[in-house]
Length: 135
Image (tube, rainbow, N blue to C red; front, side, top):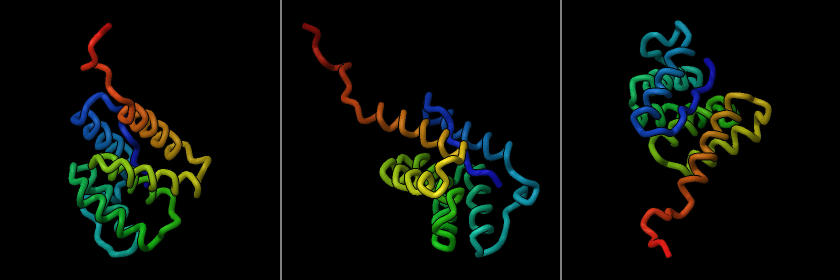
């Protein structure tokens, strides 16, 4: 199963909807129902299943479980980062993206997800000038 993709950042509703559409579009037939299994593959599949339904806390739990079993799997780390990002946990998302990129620096999906995240994260860190008085 390909890694989860991060949606663009117009607003939270579109964020979640876009992520779900990407996951649904890339899901394999084996993920059409709630998969069973306590191995990393099963946890990753169930995490994606829950993410498609918008249950990001459960997805995060499953991706964490998969990462404990396979800590050097860049696809699992990417999915973990997407789940953290979807929950607004930017520091955790950044750490997971960095580790995924260290393990798979040429992976196009991870690079795209990280680039979108970095753009959002950088913009969110800038001080706003909307409330400043003009001279």
